[in-house]
Length: 574
Image 1 (cartoon, one colour):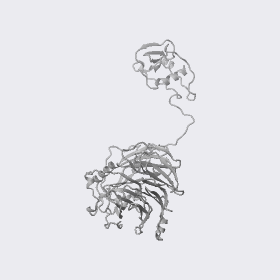
Image 2 (cartoon, helix red, strand yellow; image 1 turned 90 degrees about the vertical axis):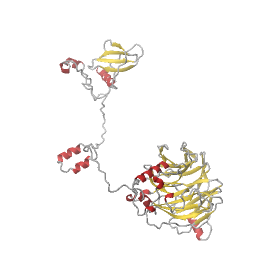
Image 3 (cartoon, one colour; image 1 turned 45 degrees about the vertical axis):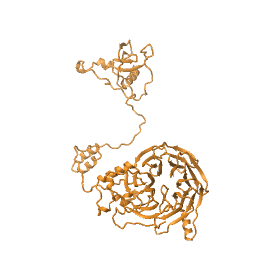
Image 4 (tube, helix red, strand yellow; image 1 turned 60 degrees about the horizontal axis):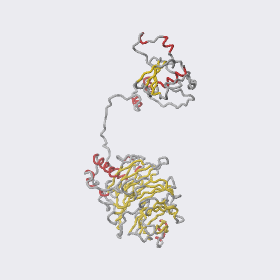
């Protein structure tokens, strides 16, 4: 094993200081496709196969802590969620060991060998470890099942079986303590009640490639999972949403869209063009086909960066997500599902690892920084990167300052427009009475009033006298005689009276059971036409007296609702 190297930038350029390689170590055994741990103050990764190396991110001068206890290569490492005591759990094919970090440091200072607590042995290859929010249990994903191990009793509280492929990631739900979510190479996710050991929900197959990573956002209550072919799936974990799919994101297409916007816009002017990250691949549209497997997902504290330094970044208070891939890091806005920033390893010449095999990001840090732990895909190098978010977003393209766009309107502002208020305030030369009339014309909010009685426009309202159109080809200038008006003038029905329920008259329209298709009054109100299903039309007098006239032909048509209400009112007044 070679001595670790600390690499830092000596140039003052902000672009050169976006990513700094703080720590680099050469291991005897490769550590690709291994779950790495990146916490608030420490980074943990396998070293030389079966050794656990812990590096302090706050004080790099501290000596590295090496923990020994595994016989087989370590496949998964995870930190606990509580700061005191800070727990760390590691797994290999021979055993799962839990370590108390403070006690291990004290043992090393005393010259003793630190020892961990063996929680379980011979589980097989463990791909993922995850502590619950209170660190009382830890989930170990071994093969096709998930074992929930109790930290205090060192017993197995539940075994969750149901996946058809190796389980690659698991997460506990922060606001539902009993819920555990898992993803697998069978390309589906499952929701469990780990206390009862029962299955709550099982999704269908999402994609053609295995699911590799999982993240649960507490703010938006959404589940995000990533696959080996660069696909992201977002699901809602709301109680009444039934795990519905919110959206699907293609990371490769989003990257191409982001690169196009970056090339078309004007980049920030920097002192030395040679210090800029390489954009040749972006301008050519990416000639080399590169897959973007989603290796890890972590929260990103992009909202802590001052808004004056964000440029095009639009996330004022929106939740953002770090996406770790083999080719670089991406920041995804969970509000609009657009990329806010792209960081490619190959664009920075000072990085030793250009293609990552494993990745872990610690996003919620102070001082606008984040740490990324990488292992090489083809080699045995392990590197810790320091990412300065302020410099990253400052290097993004900004809108052109000083070039205003003026548009002349074709017409004035409407009185109902929200801009009308500003227009009234600016025109101070208007008389006071004219200003008040303009303000009155704007629709204002009115208080909501509940009435004990509601007057309907249909059944309870009085019928209009002019409910039928008059004839235009009659004499006396279209005026009806007083006799006609008096004979067929409908009696007003009191609006306060209840709806008519008494049957005034009933008439059979056919000897055999026949459906009545339509009813229609004549324009003068003297006749009532009835269309039957047997293609016969009957014309009655308005009072339904006498024998009707019978016509044979197509059924009559009437306007929807025009005759039904009239007939009901007519029955009551007869």
